[in-house]
Image (cartoon, rainbow, N blue to C red; front, side, top):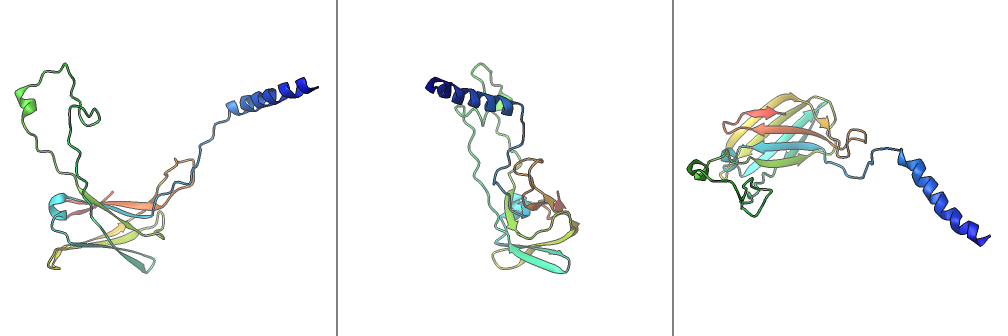
Length: 177
């Protein structure tokens, strides 16, 4: 009798694994994304900003938030860092390839969290930047932009917070999307 019990447990486990083998379901974790506005600002304009505020309005209610602009130091490309370079040991380098290139600097980005930001509802947004002396260097408004839900676990799982992406150009143009 003891021998049958010893064999029954592994067989039951095998049957369970076989039954689950064809079952595919997305795994939805507890990962979430905050609701709010992601703003990217051209670095030349961002350098003059000491204070940034974003105001979002919908249904007669407005939320004003401070926007902290951050710049991230870029990691230098090195021959030993394969992620940062496509350099190969057998490639020959031309003089033109050695010439310094001036790529467009990376924008500064910031995020203004608004927890109760509605999804798929038109929002009016005002962005104001001030310099060190308190003078306004940017005052722009978008009459309607629509927050979209985010899906940090994939489209088959519940959405995370709704977000809007905004870009501010060197000239100060405010672009949604």
